[in-house]
Length: 567
Image (cartoon, rainbow, N blue to C red; front, top):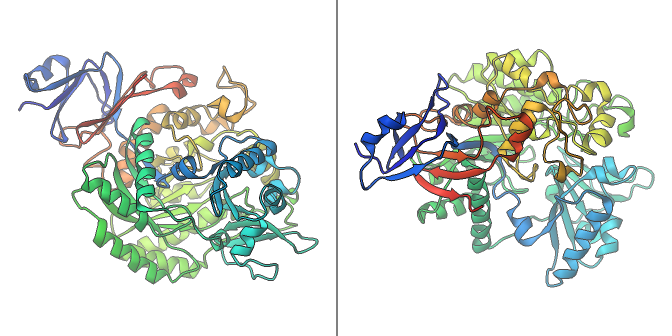
């Protein structure tokens, strides 16, 4: 058989069960038809074959991102206030003011990316006050989401637009922050409450522009498959699925996309599950690039939002008084019944759980549901900031996948020392974001940026952070670059370091397994889809602190070259 494309003269890590390394691969149409030596591949080459000399560089399977919010930061970059790079109160306010001055034509302003930790005093816990935005613009609504996606900062005009007054009742699964002394609205909505502010609307053309921006970014990082979570504040993935289907119809879809729908605690769960089933009927392609596979649940909030659900109380410094444990968003009985229904309808379950008690409740509910509904389940818990010691073995026993976020697995400047360490206490904060413990107990891990919560979803940042548990991308964090991975300043619990191989598996074959696609993608083997990338250094051999500098040279998707580094 003659190949359409051959990659030769490379160091090709196949990520098969034996971790085989070869020199060449041959591709026919969208499948891999050969892996082996440079001499052996010659029999697959004719005058019609495109031969790519990899020049000794490293080749990996196409990478798989298992928790991403499509289209990521595209709307911010293209249309809104982008605060991801603002590192101080002054920078945050300056970016907002500049954008509003440059866009007087807008009737209301949206944005994303602010950090609560850069604000002083109580604002670092509750979030910034509405008066800061009122001083910048008092006659038009402003609504800005924080970098983690759980907190919405509003000015007075936006509160008025949303119909929020001081007498409003609390929302299940959400927090409407008020001044504890006066009862006045603070200007902050958290989790379910932030959905009170009207979501931004975009035209079909703007959605396509945003998805194209997102797809170009992700192929440049070497991604060829994703699991797409909810879009923005909406639980309904229909808008983005319509856009993705359009790209597929135009033969311009360069990512395999599995999609999830959030099952919201404030709405009827059975109606939402039926909606998910209808989405599957409309968009799912059994043999194509688009799939609808997953129900997403939020069990708690975040530590910085003071609503992650903990087994031991928050510190008194968190400002919530004694014996405050955070919040479990779902009634336990209702949660278990909903999980059973989701599994019986043939969907995976993907759970946001930050606090250790939320993780335990997730494991308990999955155990009951999986016992009730037998099957080849690939259910997942993500974020996992704090985990009970006995839940590692339970997750392994139940085949619950850990979708970890290595980007956060170090003492992030300002966030750790001004937030997590304060709210949790020093001893407990040191134990956060376990990684090696999952691997040691036999839990399958996948890796994710939770983009745009991590604003730069470079997988090599995550691999370096997971291996070193230390600072990366120092310029972004406004810190001095480290030269020793054991430098203690930003290092978090080095006993939880993982190996490069485990992390690469978390982006390839193990991620494919989590998506029920291990027979199609995730490794470079004959018969699998020809999703491969070429990178400029051997991340298995170089100094760990050099991993973050890795560049993707080429990305091949379905046998086609969809990205080539121009530099």
